[in-house]
Picture 1 (cartoon, helix red, strand yellow):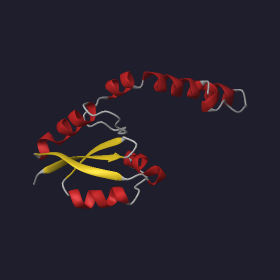
Picture 2: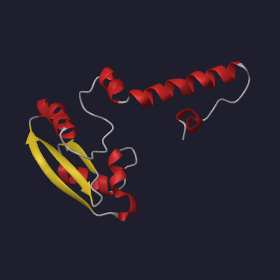
Picture 3: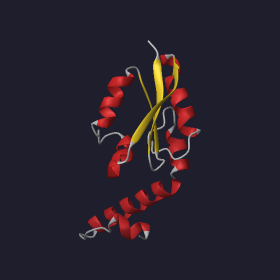
Picture 4: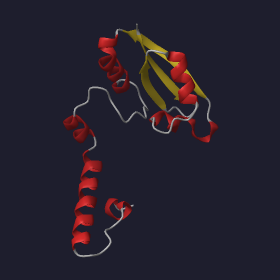
Length: 126
């Protein structure tokens, strides 16, 4: 059984890279607006979405090949990158992780004082 590495792209240029052993079934599920998959971002505003097979590979190489295409493709919306360690995630998302830590700190501090904590917008400065 081989694995298909594929890309979805909308008219705005946003891209999603994925992998599957059943390409037709997977495309069907993307089109059904699976909200647990970041590819849902491609389908907003009724933009046309095209699909392309990037390559096929052996199952043992799946994570490595999918990660390669995610890291070498512009404008990807993927949040999950196969094979990425927790440390790599933190380095790539340092500012967001720091904001989450600050939010957690202030909420705990406010709870200890019996007050409501700040919302995430007031922490991020938006």
